[in-house]
Amino acid sequence: MRKFFFIASILFMLIAPLQPVQAQNGEGPVYIVQPGDSLSSIAARFSVTLTELMAANNISDPNQLAAGQQLVIPGLEGVTGILGTEFINFGDSYRSLMRRTQVPESLFKKLNRVVSPSEFYVGVSMIVPVQGENQNNKRISPAIGESVFELAVKNNTNVWALSNINDLDGSWDGLPNDTLFAPGESSGNNTGGLPSAFLSAEIRTLPIKQGGTGVIKITTPPGTTLGGMLVDRPLNFFPNEDGTQVALQGVHALLEPGVYPLRLDATLPDGSKQSYEQFILIISGNYPDDPLLYVDVATIDPASTEPEQQELINLTAPATPTKFWTGDFLSPAISYAESTYFTSRYGNRRTYIGQGTELSINGFHTGLDFGGGDGLPITAPAAGRVIFAGPWTVRGNATVIDHGWGVYSGFWHQSAIQVNVGDMVEKNQVIGLVGGTGRVTGAHLHWELWVNGIQVDPLDWLNQTYP
Image (tube, rainbow, N blue to C red; front, side):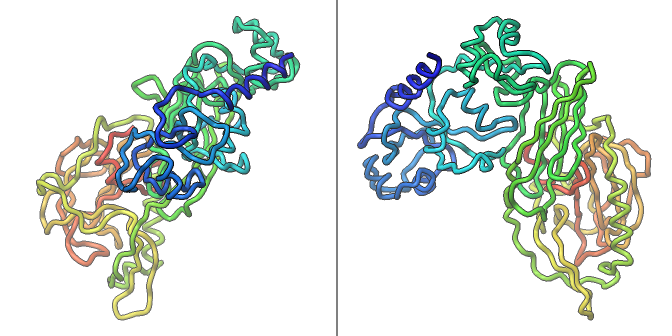
């Protein structure tokens, strides 16, 4: 009987409109145009030609497209209603998405041209039919030794309804820690397929780019300890003001674009553990090539560069549990430039050549360069503690500030350092003067930002608030 009703519900979703819409010139489901969409990208996404899409919607100019506009999608026989867009976030999976939305897997695959569940990873945009308000948003998980019947009783629902919603064969078909959906509201903000220890999970600004800063916010039951891994870096979680736990993690500028593992680990107060792992999409930062740079050969000699780089890595490795900064980061050149201008940006691919030799090194620009002459004031972008202040061969007169939570600022090539190791500095406090020491072609300020052991784009931290 349950199979009959399940099959009947699938047929109803395929035949009946998901939601009334205003029909345009053509038949088929309606897609709501999202910011950044183009007519050609929408056509490619649904595997129809641009001509077919324009004809179905009586469009003569493909450039006249606005966010929120409704487009009929031709070629999807048997599918009607409104199609929405969801970015896959941590915890979503084929199974959880089907359970949560009650959209048949065959229909989901048809809309997204998905061949394998391996294509389902964090940061990818998927098309899902909008079926009105979903009443099955409460996430529950059977404990070890707990049956689906016991779980249903505990959550005041019917065992057969619970089995039907989650496509189980019966009350015996539950697996420990499997994410199931039941009638009611979620206890957190996330309704994905995460284990019950993760009440909510949010990864900001998906997909993450090369050189970007991943912000992972998790809500857990009180007393839960979190850990995990992004790509190959262990995550450090800290308590946030809003009650969540937050991890900040940089993504290397030279990391090849693609999909990489993201894992969360939770240790509950009773000592039990829950983990969840999923692939996350890392996209290109689209960094250009800088012109060849001819520099003093001593500044690219591995005998100098490697020990200095290792010292910097060691300095920026600890994750201080105190968060010293509040609010936005400010430009360290704000005191002398009404409108900040950059002479070189983070991530640009670079080749350094030793003057008068064939010695060279390849890499990327690890920070943000500000224009300005000798002697101009450098200010702290945020509060923190000075952990290094002294001369280096490559970086010249350098200062490193620990902002807490694994976030560090570095200021290279100074003509003068005006702070000492151990000093606590405030936002916008003068810490040094612009200069031309170390590996430079002229006087400028180089500001570098490290997040949990990785250099990231400082401009991101000027354009948005972290965490």
